[in-house]
Amino acid sequence: MSIDEEEETKRMKKAKRKEKKKEDKKKHKKRKRDEESLEEVPPVPSSSSSADNKKDHRHAPSSDEKKRHKKKHKKKKHDKDGTIKDVADLELPSKHIKAAPNTDDVKIVGGRIVSFSAQDINVQQQIPQKENSTTLLLFYQYIEPVLDEESFKDLLHHVETMGEAHGITGRMRVAHEGLNCTLTGSYEDVRSWCKSLRDYKDGKYFGETEFKLTDNLPNGQAFPKLHAFKVEEIVNYGLAGVKAPSIHMTGVHLEPKDYHQKMMEEETVIIDVRNHYEAAIGKFQPPPTGAQYIDPMMRKSTEFPIWLDKPETKEMLRGKQVLMYCTGGVRCERASALLRTKMEMEEDTKALGIKGVYQLQGGIDKYFRDFPEGGWWRGKNYVFDKRFAHAPPVIETLEREVKKEEKGIGKVFVEIPSSAKEKLQALGNCEACKKPWDKYRGKRRCPTCGVPSLICKECHDADANGIRKLDRSIRCDLCVKEGITSKQQIREREEKEMEQYEKKLREIYGFELPKKKKRNAHDVENIPKRHKSAPNPDNITRLFIKNLCAKRVDQKELCELFPGITHVEWIMDKKSGNWYGSVFVEMATAEDAALAVGTYHKNKAYGRVLHVAYSPPDPKSIWPPPNSKIF
Image 1 (tube, rainbow, N blue to C red):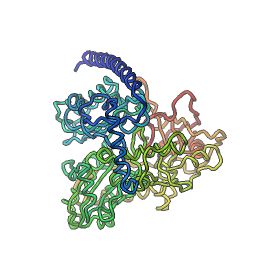
Image 2 (image 1 turned 90 degrees about the horizontal axis):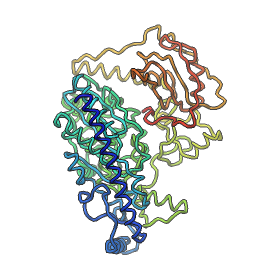
Image 3 (image 1 turned 90 degrees about the vertical axis):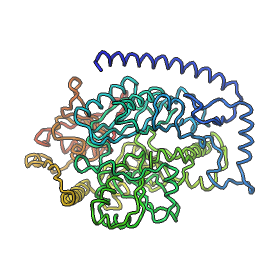
Image 4 (image 1 turned 135 degrees about the vertical axis):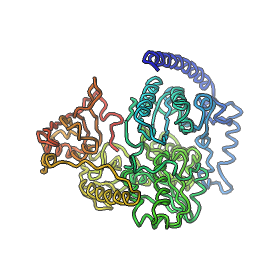
C-alpha cells in the first residue's frame, strides 16, 4: 500500500467514525426518551441472546417483562426457611452475561471471539451509555516459525497504521514470535481493527486468534495513546531464541467449564503461572478433595524456568495431572510448552510420571464470563489495564451494593448468603498494618525487590500526611518471608540460579547460548560505591536524569542504578524518534529520590557524568503518565 493510499484510508476511516458518532448520538437520545417514559424500576436483561441485540446489547423492559421479573425474583429469592443458601441462587442482572459473539462480532470480525457488555454488571447504577462507550480488547498470538526481519517490520507497520486509522489506544508487545495486546477504542473501531488483523496476509497468522472484548466500560478506562513496543518475547520468560520451547508443545487447552470440572479431580495440581503479588489478592481455591494449589512465589516470569527445575517442584508434580492458569492465557503457552518439552527431553522429568498438562483457555478473564458468580475463584483478578483489578461480575455487583449501604446511600437489594460474604472478603493484607486489603493503589513499590506494594488507604494517607511514614522496612510479604533486605541479594541469587540453569541447558540440549556482555573495569570503577542523600525538604519524588549512556542503559540497568524507580518516561528525540540518554522518573519515596540525587549528581556511571535533579511535576500535567509504570 502506497503512502497516498494509506492517507486516503485514514481519511475515509475518520469520516466513517464521525458519521458513526452522529448516528450513536441520535440513537442514544431516542433511547433516553424511551427510558424516561418508563417507571423507575430495576431493568432486567433481555431474555434473548446477545446475538439478537446490536451495539447496546439490551432493550428497555416492557411492563409485562417487569411483572415477570418481579414474580421470578420473588419466587427464587428465598427457600423454605426464608434464606438464600448460595450465591448461585441470587437473581442478579450480572448473572445474565453472555460470553459469546454477538451479531456484529460474527459479521465484522468472524472467527474466534468472545464478548460481553460491562453494562450487564453496572445495570443497577443506570449510568448513561455515552459515558460508558469504551471497548477493551485483550488477545495474544504466537507465530511459529518466527518472523524474519522484513516480515516483522511489515507486521509492526500494519498494526500501528491500522491502529491510528481506527483510533485505537493501548499497549502492543510486538516481537518476531507474535503479538500480545491490551487495547481500547470505540465499539465499532475495535471490531474493525480486529477484522483488519484477522485478514492480514489472508489470515496466515491471525486467522485462529481469539479476541476477547468487553464493551460499555467507563470512558476513563480508555488508554490515552497507542504504544507499540518492540520486544524479544511477548511474555518475558528469558526464553528467547534457541531457549524457547516450541509453541506446538503447549498443554491441552480447556474451555472454562471443562477446566472447572478438572479442578475437582484428585491427583491433580494447579500451578498459578502469575507473579506472587497478583496471587496475593486473588486465586483459584479448588475443593479440598480436588486439585492442590501451587504458587511458585515469583516476582517476575523469568523466574519460572528456574522454579520448574527445582527438585522440590518436581516432587510436587510427581504422578499428578498438571493444570496451569494465568490472567488471559498467554503466560501459560510458554510455561506449559516448557514443562512438556522437559517431559520428553529430560530423564529426571520423564521419571516423574506426570499424567498430562492442561491450561485454561482465555485465562481468568474468560473463566469469569462463564462463571459470573466466581466458581472456584476467590478474591480479585489483578489486570494490567485501567481496571487494575476486578472480581467476578456477581461478586462485583454485591460488593458495590454493600459499599452503598455502608455509605448510607442505599440498601442491599438482595439478602447476601454466607457463601457470597466469604467471596467478598479481601484475600490480601496491607504490608504496613496487616489489615485485610486487596487494592494496589498509589505508586509505591517494595523498596527491596520493586514489585507493587499492597498498602491500605489509611496507611497510604498517613504516609502522605507525614503522620506515619512508610520506610524501607515496609516490604512485600515475599521479601519478608525470604529475608530479603536489598536489591543486591536478589540480583546475586538470580545470576547464580540462571548460570546453573543455562549450564544444564547446554549439557542436555547441546546448544550454545549467546555470551552476556560484561561490564568492563572502567564502567565498574565509575559507578559510585558510596551512597549519600541530598536535602529534599519538599519531599519531591520526581527526578530528571540526563547524560545516561544510551548504548548501555535500558530499563533493567536504570532500575539497578537508581533503586526505587516506579515509573519512567523516556525522552525521545522528536525528529529521529531515538533516545539520547534523558529520562523523567518517579521514585517510590522522597528518601529514594534524595539518595539518587546525592549519590549520582555530577558523578560518573558507565564513563559519563550524570545530571540528576529534583523536578516537581507541573500541576496542569498528568504525572506519572499512563503506561510508564515499571512491571
